[in-house]
Amino acid sequence: MDIYKGKIRLSGDMRNEVRKEGLTAPEVILLKRIHGDDAFVEIEKTGREPRNHYDERQRLYTEYPAAINTDAKRHYIEELFGPNHQDLPSTVPGVTLSPSPNEINVKELME
Image 1 (cartoon, rainbow, N blue to C red):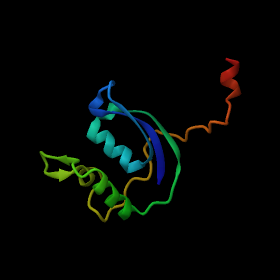
Image 2: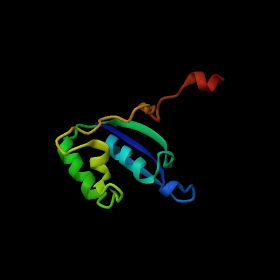
Image 3: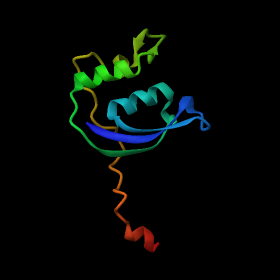
């Protein structure tokens, strides 16, 4: 499963930002659902770790117990990822691995 870092604007408020690291792909998707699609900014893929889908789902339920869609009376995890027997997404589409801090892009320096 891919691992990410980024900045979350709580409820989309630019004055209330939290930096998070070590986020899994389903956690990023869940946080976007909770706080809004545009609330998660500066998202970068930092690596990949083996994760058991069942264990990760249980961790998300524990970490975000109040993430419930009151209209549908369902937890967002079920709404986004389906029943418990389904695998979770392992990547966030459109986000690529961020360059290592030790890597220097010579082309950018020359421009």
